[in-house]
Structure formats: structure tokens, C-alpha cells
Image (cartoon, rainbow, N blue to C red; front, side, top):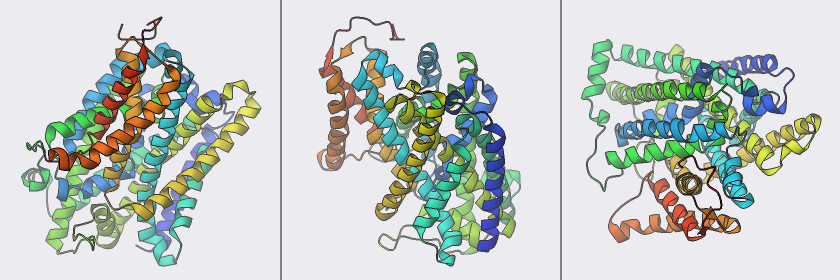
Length: 494
């Protein structure tokens, strides 16, 4: 594919997004920016959330990891269903009962000022790092496919990519994003479906042959029974449940969309149908991964490897095949798909970061509407710069699959949120509020120390379940600084 063609695709795609932004951001207010006036149809939210939840990591890393990890990731996806059940039955009723704009306001009402600021702080770190990792992946693809050949530095590629996101989100916020993410989710689903069809056609497989090829491949193994294996099914399953609870239920980004529904019942319907869709979509991505490696083997294509380890670089497999060995049409489909799924995730994350910082850190409601607009647009631009810096740092140090890096980072940054909310919901005790921040900083450090030595101590390697350990340590720390509560009226478990 020529750089000119790819640049034309990107330009045309963003023209569509900007048009949507202009149409949906008329008379935008803080309420429409933060929660879309609490008037969004549940089915639109459910559909838009697919693109937000998946990101370019799903589009590239999950198909790329099947050679080394098989379908072990499917255990994580099945665990998601339990996590979504907890969100719909425990967290959503709490958020709607309190009529929250930022979900971290709950922590202030339950424990106090420092607990509230601590929760918001860990979200800001978690989402900024997660969004930057995801953007890093698509920026790397664009760099590989276009900008290396033009001599454009990676830093410029990243900066332009994030600037484009800023341009179509800074006016309308969530009200705009619900529409742009609906468009981008549709584009992503069409692209993955077309990619699977084209791959099957290249391998001369009909539908039955496609199902048989995927099913009989050693790369489609889901169940791994060795508890010491990082692919152990039940470890992955439990990790998936807790990852979902923290990265969706305790994350302002995803919950901001749910809070835009008209009422709790609509939000729960959204979560139910979204759960079914996300499982099916991940099956498609894993199937695509099997087909990619089958195609490379059938055509005798040398896959990109890490010179130091000799292992295939999974994140580079789909981009390499799509841009160098597929038909022009298939290459176009790939570029549109990766752009759609990545920016659907990134634009939502940028808006959530702006929302949390404005509401939780700046108390934006104290200003009039004109001042609020200035503050949120300046904050929006500031977080755009933060994402650029994190991406450039990550490029300098990354040596692993991006999806692995995302979940490992989540284990350390979301663990304190898991501990805080678990303590608030499932106990009736209060906290010595000023001690919450030190406890929530100490827990990830202890988690890191245990993780660094677990192989030597117990011949055990932590995977994504590092999140659970971190949450437990946070919970224990909070228990040590707890006190009997004067009231339990905000505890939904009572």
C-alpha cells in the first residue's frame, strides 16, 4: 500500500469524525460534555461501548498472541461475564442512587476527602497509562506503514494522532463521543468480519472449513490445567472477572457512558447486551489470529521476530501481513479497522480524564458555564500532551505485547481502587481518611516486591491476577486503619 493512499484514508476518516463532532456539539454544556444530559438511548451506549472497550490492542495484539498463548485469553473473556454481572447488579444501582457524575464522588460520601482524591488520582494514572499504551500501538502501525518511509519521526506521528482526537472531542465531549464511537464501532466490526472472510478466501475455506480449521488448530486451545502455567484457565478466568470490575465498573471512562442512560433499568439492559456482544467479538478476533498464522505458514512468509529472543513479535504479525502480503482491498480494510477501534477507545479515554480532573480535582461546578468551558477545554488539551509524553516513554522501554503491558499496568494502578470500593461496599466500617493515600501507595509497592520474588519463593509466576493480590493487600491495609462507622446508609450491601 502506498503512503499516499493510507494518508488519504486517514484524512477522509477524520473528516467524517469532525463533521459528526460539529453536528453534535451545538450548544454544548458541561452536563452534555460529562454525561450527555443523561438522555442517551441504552442500545446506542451498548454499541458504542464495544469500540471503547476493545481498542487497537484487541485488533492487533489478540490475533498476534495466539501462537504463543493459544486461546487462553478466552478464559479472561469468559471471566468478563462475571465482572459485568457484578457491575450491573452491585455498582450501577449504587451510582444511579447517588446520581453521580464522577463515580469517585462515592468515596467522598462513604469515607471522606482524602479517599475521594486518592480514588480519582489512581483513575487518572490508570486511564492515562492505559490510553497511552493503546495509542502507542496504532501509532506504531502507522509509523511502520507510512511515516518511516517518509522520514517522519515517531514523535510527530504520535502528536498529530492525538491532536486529531482533540479536535473532534474538545467541544461536545461525551455527547459527541457516543455518536463517533457508534460510527467507529460499526466500522471496526465490518472490518474484522471482512478480514476473516478475506483470510478464509485466501486459504480456500468455506464456512464449514473455516470453523473446522480454527477448531482443530492447536492454537485454539482454551483450557490449560497447570496452576503454575501463566495460561492456567481458572487463574485467567478469575483475572478476567476482576479486570472487568476495575477497568469498567471502577473506571470513569466506561461508567461515564453507562451514567448517560436515562435510568438504571436502561443502563442494566445496556450492560446485558454488551456482555453478549463482547464475548462474540473476541471469538472473532481469536479466530482471525489462527487464520493469520495459517496464512503465513501456507504462503511461506517469514514473520517478524525479536532478534534477542528469536520469538515472533505477535503485535507486528497482522500489520505486516495486511500491508505487505494481502490484497489492496484487504490492506485498506485493515487500516480503517485499526484506526476505528483505536480512536474509539482513545477519544473516550481523553474525555473521561478531562471529566474526572475537572469534577474531582478542580471542582468545576463552582464556576459559571463560560468559565467551565474554558477550564474543561484547557484540561482536555493538557491531557492530550500527557498522553504524548507517556507514549514516547513507553516506546523507549517496551519489550512485550501491548495487551500484556496494559493488563500488568492495570494490576498495579487499579488494585487500590478495587480495595477501596470493596471495603466501602462490603463492610460497614469507616476509615481514618488521612491514612488512605499512604495505604493505597504502599499496596502496589508490596505487590511489586512479592511479584518480583514469587518465582524464587514459591516457583510461581503471577500473571494478570496480580490485580487481585494488589486489591487484597489494599483491603487489608484499609482494615488496619478502619474504625467503626457512625452510619452505614451508603452501603448497598446492608
